[in-house]
Amino acid sequence: MAKSTSSGAKLFFVYFFMIFLGLVALVPVYVVLINATRSTEQLNLGISLLPGGYAMYNWKVLTGRGFQIWQGFGNSAFISISATVLSVYFSAMTAYGLHIYRFKGRKLIWTIILIIMMLPGSLTFIGFYQFISRIHLTNNFIPLIIPSIAAAVTVLFIRQYMSSALSLEIIDSARVDGANEYLTFNIIILPIMAPALAVQAIFTFVSTWNNYLMPTVLLSGNTKMYTLPMLVATLRGDIYRTEMGGIYLGIAASLVPIMIFYIFMSRFIISGIALGSIKE
Image: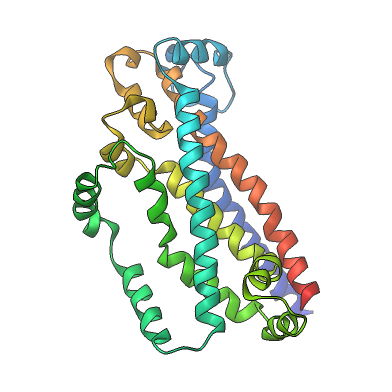
């Protein structure tokens, strides 16, 4: 009886802690969404947990003063989706090669990947910009997409997941059945790795979507290529200074695609776990 009471108390504190962390993460987002429906006068009165009735007015203010929200959506979506697909796919391929094949230099390559992972991104920022400038790729989406292929953290995560979830007998069976390496990887391995791929896709998409510094440096010469975070940053100008509701609506609009993408990809985490258990 005592053990049952003790385990029940531990379970209660675990759920309480998880709910608390969830509220800490969700409350700021909820406040932003609520403020997007309030007028500037209402915002000056303080925080409210109930929505206002000025969502359409704020939308007209936001889009009626030169804020190209759909253009920003399109640019951000193209960069984020392209970078996510390339990063996850090629990182999974790299992790698969390092985990399955035994070749000379394998440990050295893995060590280099770990070293790259520990280096701060700001260390290569100036050199990267100078390189892109010399090859005349500023004001271009390519430098924001192609470098995402080299994602050391994603390779580390997927390889560690493979170590615990991928059975080598599946690969041997595929080879015996006549499947080549690319077919084995694309048709058999990727579905098994769906939970890890979905998690890394979420992280990559969110970080790419919210990326502000690099696009600002590389795309500042062409306003038609501005991403949504870059456009949201322009809301601090004089033209929107007195329209706080419109500013909050612009910020809220940049959060919606992230939430939609997370909800969509979370389905693959659950279904991928079930599929992996069946295949093994």
